[in-house]
Image 1 (cartoon, rainbow, N blue to C red):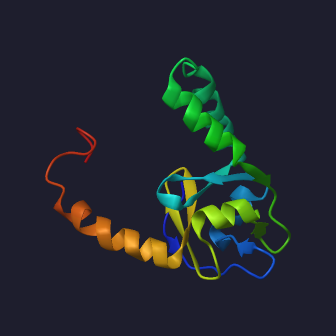
Image 2: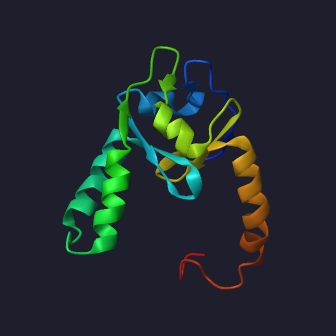
Length: 143
């Protein structure tokens, strides 16, 4: 499970230090792909394989499934962190997420998300109040 908020910087070669507490879990490989709200999703290889199986089972006759799968897989990049725990973020993914130097990496349960820091701050500004104001169960019986 991935938790917390971290603030690594992107270096001049497009590399990002993974949060130290997750380096061992991600050392065998990971997949970076486009996420919603212009962030990047980072999945451990096993979780990406689980998602692949779920999408494989989805009906390809559904236009939304085809469209999502095309963007999701076409933009995916499998990476292996270097010995210092850095991963290279391919230029098209950096462009998609608007990544420059200051990044925010958040834990999002089964994945990490990489955000441009200003975009993350803007997102939080818009969404935190709605989160605070939730008056009905998001997950019935749990929350």
